[in-house]
Amino acid sequence: MNTWWQEVVDTLQSEFSDITDAKQLTQVVVRLVIAAVLGGILGFEREHKGKAAGVRTHMLVCMGAALFVLVPRLAGADDAALSRVVQGLVAGIGFLGAGTILKGEKLSTAQVKGLTTAAGLWMTAAIGIAAGMGREMTAVVSTVLALGIFSLVPLITDRFEPPQDRDSHQP
Image (cartoon, rainbow, N blue to C red):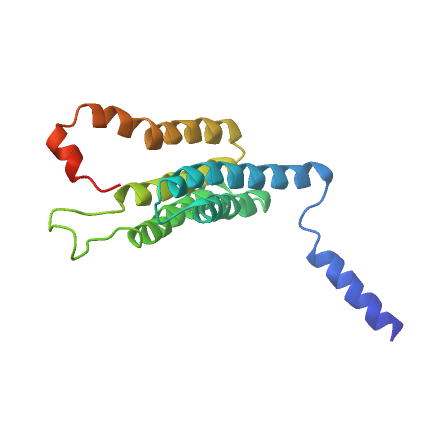
């Protein structure tokens, strides 16, 4: 029975041996934490504005996108394989984004809600991809720019909107 338990222990060790050294562990942790934090920043802004996709959604999308490119990269996938992973992510996030776009009965036929949230999720996935690929500074800069678009652009566009249109907006 002792050899059986040793085989179990050996198998468990081999199953958890995908991270081989401290450098690799640090890379994995840093990239996933950066993705979660950056996604959380964008999600906080969206949740603060009362949008459907908030902190947790953005964190999971960003970290998930990072993980989808990080694992193949660490496993030695070539650029062509990573390109296919990114293509799949971009298409998959489109489905998630589509779920945030609404065209309801209370809205006029020309009104569609949720496009900015869908675009934000798409951007969040792109930031996660950057973080997962080890492009942390690119991910940070992209997050700052996206946060500026979410926060500052509405202030600018509201200044140029005619007063009668401002009254018809819902918060």
